[in-house]
Figure (cartoon, rainbow, N blue to C red):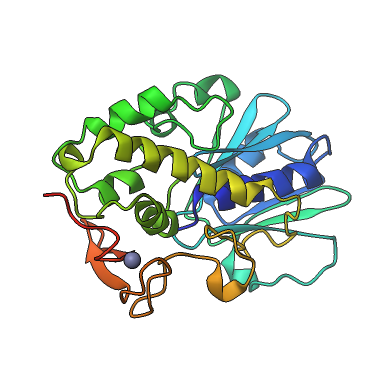
Length: 277
Ligand SMILES: [Zn+2]
């Protein structure tokens, strides 16, 4: 699943390419989108902006229309010049939005809907989102309160829960826990206030660091993510994807285990992240 920073960068890239431009072509494999297009054409509208809300991608069109997409595990938005070859097959295309200068293609996107701008604020799924780690007005107290609410849950699962904090995916989950020395399997009630503060601050730091560079790639899902601050591709992450390799802090082999209801893989160092319980 793409993390919040990936969606944020993709939104920024799409915004730079499309904002202020008139839509000259719209296509979709989703009947519920083409039905809206048939009744109130998307073609001819102006793209007013593209933004990320948690892991949701929101495209604002003129005339009170918003396209919300969610990538889940495999969805992605690419941006091309007209006539440029796509990097994914045609059958993976779900949505095409073209202006004079750019063609935005949504591949394998599982969730897409058109909503009226006035309904965005009361949209059920958006309303449930926890504080957005990449949001301008991130509410640290509210984030902390939502984490504490889940006292008996394992902290790694709580960090992944978008209703608690919006933006952390499976990579940052492991990275943030290692950075703060917290066991992924600790119940929230056994995690100290200082540790919770560290987790929230570090998650925000990592996500922001990965959207701060101006190098938004035009193909928006080629991940360039790092948490260690090192630029060597083999040294960019602390524990994620490094099962059996030595911990970068203490050289203990990195452990791996499926965790939680969705059996998401967790990487951790049993020495640096001792369970307090
Ligand atoms: Zn270690």
